[in-house]
Length: 258
Length: 258
Image 1: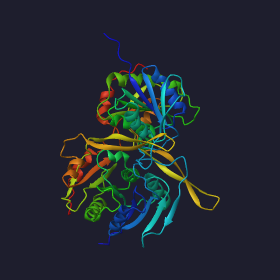
Image 2 (image 1 turned 180 degrees about the vertical axis):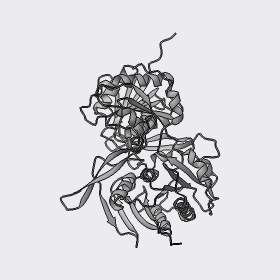
Image 3 (image 1 turned 90 degrees about the vertical axis):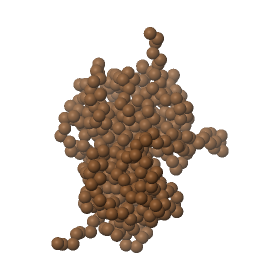
Image 4 (image 1 turned 30 degrees about the vertical axis):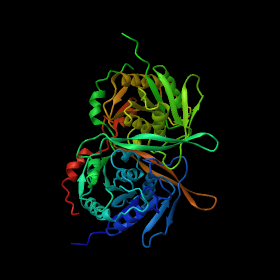
């Protein structure tokens, strides 16, 4: 038996290349493979699947942590993945793409808004086994230590098994050191109820800060919201085929007069 | 029988409030309801489901087209929908949300990158029947006239039937005046093969423009790509539950050692 080749792991995030969460992730990944980091040069939370098409991008190698190949990118998390595949790996796909560890949950409907998850989804579109990791702690002082053994184990499982075609994992961790285990879940039916905080600028013109309250409308015990509330790490397999297949027969009953 | 109340229609887009596409859409919608426009003050193509959380937003009423209530917003297409629901409609949901008409296709995988479609998806998250419209013509001189009768008919059908819970329509039109009819489709399995155009700035530092080639990896005749290639308007029902339900039993066979 020959020794298995060390896997190459692309690490990306949306909180930016200097965030503690990506530091935790790259150090965990370094235990299982060769790490290459391509991350935004500034925070890109809430960027969803945005790409940069109206202006050019910068990509510069940086030397922050000893022995880890790192690049900062001026674009979005999805731009980082596209640039990594094309310009850093020159079309040779890495064995794994991991995104995070995000400062704050990306469970349920947040999968759509999350730059962390969109980067992982972009990895999956590129046929790279991909995982997004998020922790329920927005603080820059968040303690990633309790979830790191889960991060390592889940990454190793994905490297060993691969993922079903067209899927990517959305992994969320509760805060604290009492994580009971891992649950495979579906995305809870939940949304944000927006509240805009209106203020007046010094010129007496209004401006608005987006705020909101997370509303869970799902009583299921098989959801990511349920798992996290009960101190489990949640794993939701996510797909980028957004077709509502069940709605196709319904729409085919409509009669169009044009 | 009493006369039906005129429906209230929120019109949004990602090409910005002065784009010809939104002008065509608002004039078509004016034939069937009361129109309120809330659109970005500048082009927001490729913004996906991005929201603005690191800086405040502006929302200003503008008077561009006689008799149409219009607001320009400094944020993303999704911000526009959130601000419309909360600050323009004050929580009273409109009867319909339409987004577009986009200058350029948003078929297949483009549903993820598209600000036009993300605005429509956000409408659906807000439980508003929602439709995104796109035309296969990037030009600012694009001729929207041939597709306008389809836009009107599809909007009327949605007002009459509603949409299955958690779904939104992604409607794309071929260019030209030979549209054969409407096909209900699934999202084609396709992606962009990135090509970054590297240039040197006057200071001899490299920068990159994102470009790419659309690759259809799907031979199905029930896809949006097929329909458009054969001069049909494509309608894909899209859902925002991104769970890959078929992958849950697969992941449940994995044994986690943590």
